[in-house]
Length: 423
Image (tube, rainbow, N blue to C red; front, side, top):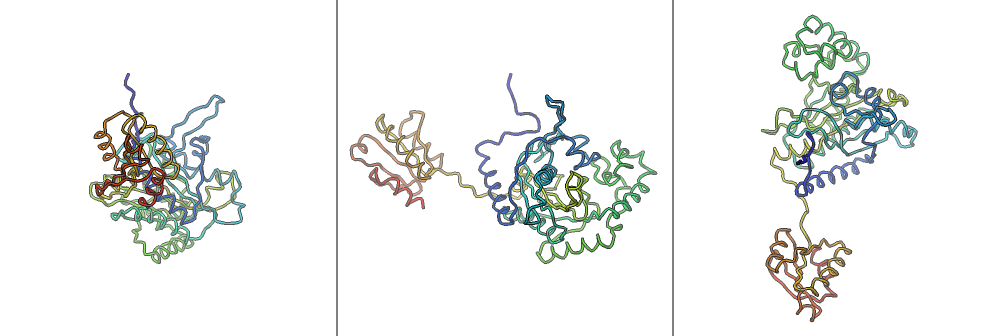
């Protein structure tokens, strides 16, 4: 039997991992600059956590979660997103009592959703996200959006569109909910079964339906922004003012609702406008989730954050033809000619590595010509050649691969020589 990678997953091979490492290093550096400290949570959580946070009526909970029962009869779920786990940890470890508020957290790791595989979308995918918990200041909403935009621009993307909306407060949502029910109810029989079930439970989710997105009633549905209370409108206006100050362009889309129930007030998505990117253009999404901490068992503490898929980010880079600058070359390749020379080569390579010089050699017992070809393929900056003559002289031949020049260097000086020239 020939085994293959499970459907919806992928192997990231050695020729691809340098790009991943480059992106990960940029994400970690920006998190450091913005002062969002890393948190690491378990890959699986109690299922009820996601039911209470993400929402029973969402596609994630209804259709996409990988849920299993452990030997103790407990229902566990592979995390489908990172906010719920982060907030659970925030509550469990009483981080709301920390002297420095808000608590700014970042995370990066695999998430799991059972959904149809598409370009840049997998059942196991890597998500980077940040959460700022403890502040109701609209300025931090703008900071979160700025952070997200900064990621894509730092990596060289230009074809971007930021879309924002306000989901308002509870009073706003209640009034809008009644209007949506009245709008859809007379024709709900024309909609899919999911929408029928959502009409009374959570009609806002109808606007997020992928099946009935082209139904005429979708275009004429009551806009949430028309029901914003004065405080909600003022909050949204403040967020927009901060974005203006930051010079961040945006579009207001009254139909943007996001796919998770915990959002309120600010919601946003960053999309790729690159030609050929695909039908699903969203790269990143986030917003404010006041009330989520309390729902999970903590105090009434506000929060805001975003998350992005690294797979989608890589797809956007490819669509725009952006080549990441990755350092994957080899510092030195040692060519050994003869058994005694090979002993010395093993010793030299060890001394190089101890000084932080990346080094490799031939382990296939090939001739010198084949070893030189191998050094070339590995993009070695230098080749160190050692044979019987060199052993007798206590020296090695060093070839600069870029220029083709070569010279003899005493063995006891080779480490310093390489460090100086590599600098």
